[in-house]
Image (tube, rainbow over all chains, first blue to last red; front, top):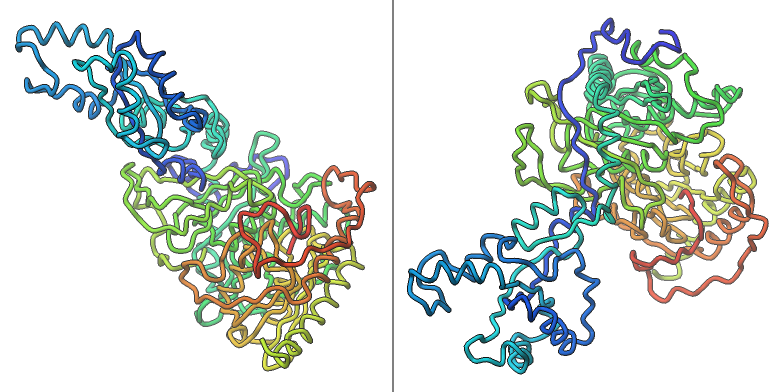
Length: 421
Length: 195
């Protein structure tokens, strides 16, 4: 294959049939935390024209209250924007309203008026003030001083952290309390960045994963490794330039023979490790040094072991002066193990796409949801590491997606869940 | 750890330090290690990420690749690692998958340590058997080696940062507790490093 040829052309001859499916961005560890964490807060029904006075009264009663801690939550809300379950607590749908004092006929009119004038006020986290103390403070203030209108504070659960997308904000507003989305994501990549990159990768991702599948199948057929494969791609010029293709070689002996499958095999010959090593050797070649002058013991298995791997090995299609795997993308048949996830991070990849989630061994996912192709998430296990976006702890981050086949039957399913990919 | 045990572990950590010094002289991040089985060194390694243009060529990988040329994989289950810097997340996982018996290290790695510095890959839930770790053996020497390296230029890194103004700090704070808290933002070694 010629260096200038686009990556996906010619792959049909190798029996690579593109997979059909979609890319789903991985949730970061902080996003998972943000999606789960809630706190209890008081809410209060107040007449609209007294909302400002009540706000002042609360600030006076809780001088240390930092509203910036929950600025993603709307402070004052109209009835119609409340989640249904809160609407029902204030106005049960049957005639026996807790504060209903009129007959059924004129209650319609009263409700219409209330809609117009009542506001719902997010007071504070329940940890900021005792309920009894809050009520005591409020009854001293207008309008609650009037015995006919005692303060009516409820306790509800609200999301503790900011939403990370407009969709999440809309969902939370229905479930908890109206939420403001500030068009930022402090807990992960911005949704527009993910969308833009996802659109760019989508047309060729199925082909690249099919090539990774083929790499895994070839090593497996030769008895060298598990059916796991990996493809490293340079897409900086807008088309996929395939830089390295490698399959798993954990069952290959240093002399190049298949070995018996005794746990755990040669761990450093996982597909990701091999592919990264092949990129390093390609870089040495492009830089004009002889890769063989750098000692590389056979257990690294950093030379091609199948014809498919060889096809992509010889062409020097990598820009000179590159650093590690900066600007490169990596496609893997399975979610990589913790070792390989961190190898991808150390190598400073740009983007990572994997096929099958590995809930017992995978290092990239942070959530515990086992995605099913039909979209219904099933509770599963997961290590929760999220080793792709932990910028406060690890010195590199990259974008990561899992692939969901449109037709689940095409997924590689013959590997066990305990496999370290 | 009694005096006899201490002397035993320090003997092998000294060999690991020697490897790290060799790495420093070779313009590699000064991390060195030895693998010990039945009281004998069966493999040595030092960081080789610059020479190989491969960010995964940490001392532990280099040493194990050499060991597996001569020894069966199963021998690692009766083998201990002595490494000057806490294994990173990647190496910590590799060691666990191979079934290493125990790990002894010098200083913690708060940038991406995998055995207490950032994550606890050695004992977290996993399909593989956990292994015990002991840190702090010749900790000060391990830190000083890294600091010496970081005042040099790493011309393999993109857009080299201006390091002329950097000074070699020689003061090392005593350990207040046995292991640093994972949330601590202050690094023992400063800057990024590969361990």
